[in-house]
Amino acid sequence: MRVSTAWVADGGTGREWVPARLSSLMRPAVFFDRDDTLMEAGSLPAPPPPAAPGDVIDPALVCLLPGAYEACAALKRAGFVLVVVSNQGSVARGGATTAMVDAVNARLADLLGHSVIDAFYYCPFHPRGRVPAFTLEHPWRKPAPGMILAAAEDLGLDLSRSWLIGDAERDIEAGIAGGIDASRCLRVGASLPITHAVQRVLSNAHCC
Image (cartoon, rainbow, N blue to C red; front, side, top):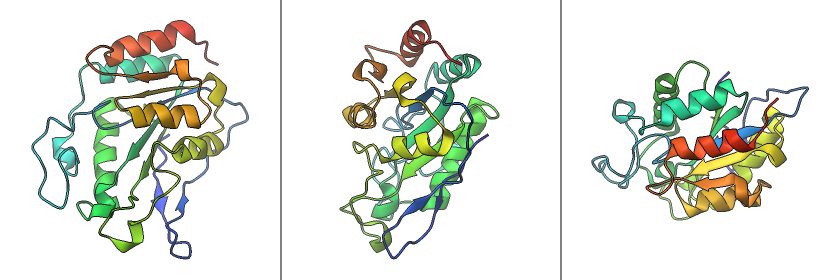
């Protein structure tokens, strides 16, 4: 089941609300960053300003990175809840709308396979934005752990048995700040492809 993030105004604070899916059992999850972890971003042609290089605002440009499909499928078969947590400051900068982010997320979900990703969480806020409603620092913006903590509450997740996979230091910092052990926060890249990271998860974790 994919949970779509909905944004509602709350006294001008930009408070988020995510439909809750309660679980009777606390389950382990793998949290994924989105851009340059599961799908190409930095290598794509730069979008028109005010979007910045690396912002993916067109679902037609969504392309899985090598190994992403196989990695997510293997984790899903093992019983992990899969959650995408991403900063989307392009919304605050005026380069995208939340509807555009939702469309990109939907395309990524389609490419990964039906119901592989359980939930998408994203933060459209940035303190140096141009859109007043989204121009603020926010506890959901990585390296803060707000998205991870919200997902754990919404989806009934056991963070002590969960993992995080991302390509940037802020991803790792968010995972640790959220209560995921540092050894379970894996930074992927040239030295650690996503398939190798997932092999590490599967060889060191016992799900369900």
